[in-house]
Image 1 (cartoon, helix red, strand yellow):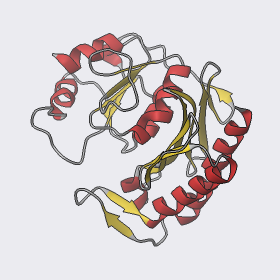
Image 2 (cartoon, rainbow, N blue to C red):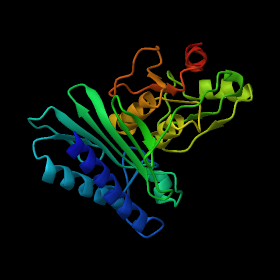
Image 3 (cartoon, rainbow, N blue to C red):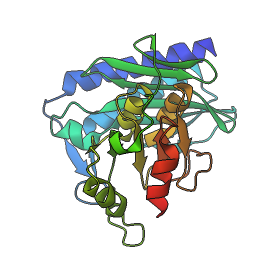
Image 4 (cartoon, helix red, strand yellow):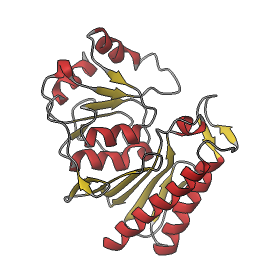
Length: 256
C-alpha cells in the first residue's frame, strides 16, 4: 500500500503543478452536456499525467476517470480520478478547484488525495489511519447547534422539478443559516473534513466528484450518508457529509 500511496501523492502533485502553470492562461474550452458544463484542454492534460503514471507503476489496475471513462483490468484496485474538480472555476480564473484521486480496493475506498495547487493544500486520507492536510492531522468541527451551522452545497447544471435542489436551500436561507456554494464538491468535502464547514449536501454527484472526499470526511471523524441516512456508497448521486453532530438535523431538513 505504501507504493500506491507514494504514486497517488506524486500523481496529484504533478498534475497540480501543470494545473497551476496553466491557471489564468490561455487554453481551449469545450462544452459537455449543457452550455455551462465545461471541459478544458488542461483537464485532459492533467488526466493524461495521472493516468500515464498509474499505468507505468500499476498496469493491471483499473481506472475510472471523468474525461477518459472506465478502463477495466484484472486487479482488485481501481483508481477514481477527477483531473480538475471545479472546471468552471478554473476556466474563469477562480482558484477554488483541485485534483481529486481515490483508490478503491474491492468495494472500499482505501486512499484519497485532493490537491488545490493554487492554495498549496494537499488533503490526504488512508482508511483506518486518519485524514491530513499538508501532513498534519485534521478533524471535523465540534459544532452541535444546527441553528449556527456553517453549510456548503452545490447545484446541478440541469434543474430537476421532482428533486428541486432549491427547496432545501430556500428553507435554510430563510432561517438565516450561512450557506456557501464553492463550485467544487471535492473541496466542499475537504473543508468539512478540516472543520471549515460543518456540513455539505448535494444532488446529482458522480463517483469522481466524491470518492476521495468521502474517505477524508470519514477519516476526519465525520459522517457520510445518502439522504435516507444510510451509509453512502460512491455510485449514489446524492450525498450528505457532516461533522456527525448536526447530521440528523440536516437529514430532517432534506426529507421534510
